[in-house]
Length: 442
Image (cartoon, rainbow, N blue to C red):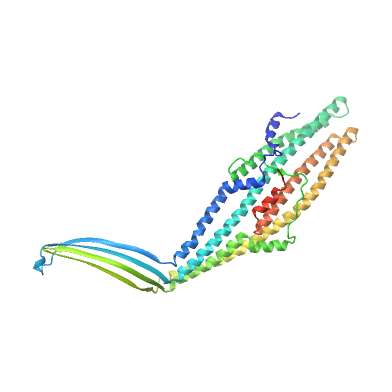
């Protein structure tokens, strides 16, 4: 009764026990090297490191070299007959100048702002690292879920085909009605359709994983049989929420953004403040010319040092407007910080409930799997002795395989909730992924 097309489609789904199957940690390392989203975040961090250098440059001296070469033609003065006729003049000027800011309040605030920008970029990159761990684990377990569903559907198809064959035999000898055969055939046709859908879902999930790691994942290691999942430590949800409100990297970045906004206010207020610079320079000026029968030339050099200052008087209310704008943006940054804290706390609460509820569900489904297996065995025996009908056996089979699918999904969801809980609290690291990797059957 087995459909040959389904057999071909399923051939690639049953190699998870091979010794060369890739595990979660290997997939994560591939993602570190190939994920475009993470590479973008890494480039942003590298760019953010330059903000400190750019801010410091405003406190350091600037040195410039400038000069000019000019040539002019004209008539000689008629007041002096000795220089009658046309005149040609040229000059060459070279100046080296150093400017050292002595008091520029905006420059100092920009220096502080640059250091804060580095902290913000580091926090954003750390958040990207945590996001990558979660994305990789989710894509990995999505593939395993699709594989489990397909394997379960295949096992269900085999069991139904056996029941269908039994119903046909019993009908032929007159111990069962044609209804039993029709019921078994309907279940068999349904599971065949579900297997096709399951194969498509598996391909989609593999494509999603391939998008992250940049290549075909191959076969993946599956969870060991009968694994025991641990609850969150610490056990109190308040501890996780408190950690999320303080250590979540989105919260940290938002806190830094508030400080950056404060510096922006000071930078704009500096438009009202005077500026003082130390200016030192050395110049060389050479002049030459020819007028009539005479010629003149000379070279002068000079050194200079002094203080240059500037006091702003009026700028058309631009500075005042910029200060008001910066104050409003600081208020926005504070509200963004509060929103980030609330989001982190909510994420921690949801993930904590996901872990604790998931553990309870896993335990309940494990018991349900045992009960469903016992119910199926009893219905099969009852069918053989004539106290149960075919539909009872089919329903018991359906219940058992549905329970197995749900149990596998509950395990994956509980593991993912644990990762999200640590991510919300800002403590998710590669080591946490390595611990989960020990649960896989390599």
